[in-house]
Image (cartoon, rainbow, N blue to C red):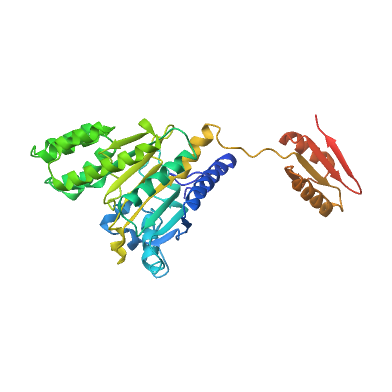
Length: 398
């Protein structure tokens, strides 16, 4: 049997030193933003029952979930999404809370991606959920929180706005199977025009087909909305178009300029989105680092109907960008190595504590002798060594 004890599973990695620091820094920055806006932290189990994610509205293919069973043989999964478990929590443990409920989370999610895609199967996800609030005020609250969160981390982000009703209303008019519908969604999401056109060419060329064909290219400023009015003749689509225009105009007061875009081809992978949707992009990351929107019917799954919206941020991806740009303040090397001679080990620890209180970064030596302590300090680039015995002897290394 082949031994895999020295490698990590596909789609995972070990995080070392600066990588850990950068991810924790991003999580801390985002948590501060959310806390100051009145959101409260929650954590859900890393292992959930498969039933939480089996509803078709979840749109997480079962082949993308890591599955296992408990001692009773019940099917379980590693958490592939944060919103659904929080919806479960809200419908059970939080059902008597005063609405709206403001929650934020910082936890890992696990999805089995196809090989060679370069995507991680384990991602630190940070985000918020606003439960029990609907309408323009709630949508602006969620989107502006997303804007503030990204702005605290990077200056060159981009926010794209869309609406779930465009795709859902149009695709209903197409004579396609459920699998073909998901193919169309995937082609639009990846802007794979060739594959999309090939599939649409096999259908009767109706107004809906023409609109779907054009959807991925409806990207830009307010002129996109004007073009869309000429493509859609369905009231179910025109109303969301007017609402999207209203939200866009409200957000332009933030002075984002060309960093605020309209993308009518924004079709989030999760089918539970019902209205406004949005994504956040950062230069240096090929995938969106932020995905969110409104999902007013999601809590129906758990028997607790209420309006809901939120977003999730890939903290690992954001941290990687910030680290590559030198935006993470790296932990400095110790200023002092403290070495206690035999019988003075406890005294050396107390001396180390006193140096730390004075603002120095101090490391207590576990070397066996003074000579090895000095050798260690030279290799680690520590310029000062304090030897502790009856007295304190300080040595400055060249």
